[in-house]
Length: 172
Image: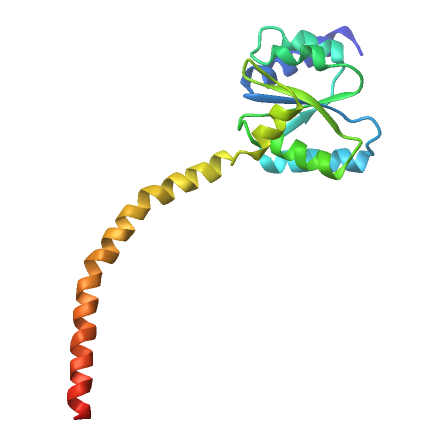
């Protein structure tokens, strides 16, 4: 790799690390190209990305970012998954690790907080940002729905009483 290419790679990685909210480090030794493509595709669908770079260049790119704590985890063939949604990358990484035993999660960082494997699993078990938004909207809409049901209930009961009385009069 030429010096200019290395400098460009470091700048690009630094930009990614500065804008991400979570970074997950995993070892991928033994994965096939097809499996790596599947991982990249799953990450992309979840709104995350996967980077494979030289560990030395990644450590240089980490300097001055919030996720600098993942530096010591970069040993051997590692892949770094990043996302702006704090749940997207961990969720996909955990699911992929369950299906592929050669994909081993080492740890990660959420902001300045260092995460071990259990921390990554805990993040993955949380609902995503979209799911939380849906729950909040449901909670906000529920009282209005209940009010509408209560407002319509007396009229409905009155209509059923009149209908029952009318059908009793016809039967007699």
